[in-house]
Length: 220
Image (tube, rainbow, N blue to C red; front, side, top):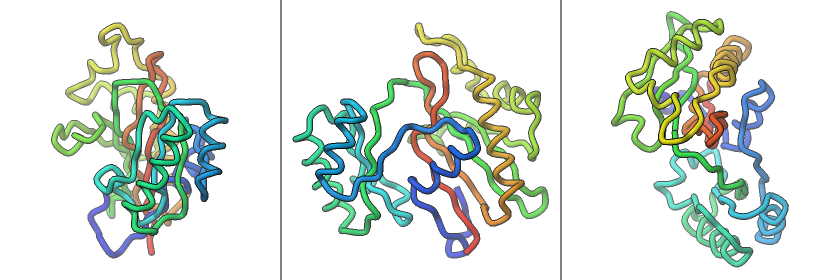
């Protein structure tokens, strides 16, 4: 999301999700495991299937780096995935994240970017791995009202995805509104935070949103 390479430093996904959670943004339950045994124990506590992800501030494109393993159903698969991620990341890890495999097919993106003229601006649109290709996002200057947040949902070309698509429940617009408003608050209350990227912001089958992946960039 940020374009000023070299001027910003990123937080790890674990650090980023903790900031989002502190502002009431729904995030996927996450355990940071340092050893294989900790990952196995976390997976058993979380309940299978689980996802493993490499965790490092320098690992912003985890999927491309081979540092994400999905739909792990047994402890043996967790151990194998742990080893594969360590190998792919060449040891540059703070640990490995263990998360439940979230059910949902509608991927959104949300975030915040600090504009030199207007200050914190909140972003919302269609997410997932094709965010840049789809290029279907809109922006509003913070602070946001509920009316502003709802208008953003109607302001994207693919707004129909928020409806009852193929038997899924419509998006919980109130919960989405609270998330967008909170992103604006983060920007307004933390001058050092220059950008936030929540992608995907997944809609569960019941329509409630949850941040599955997140990155935050700070001024160096």
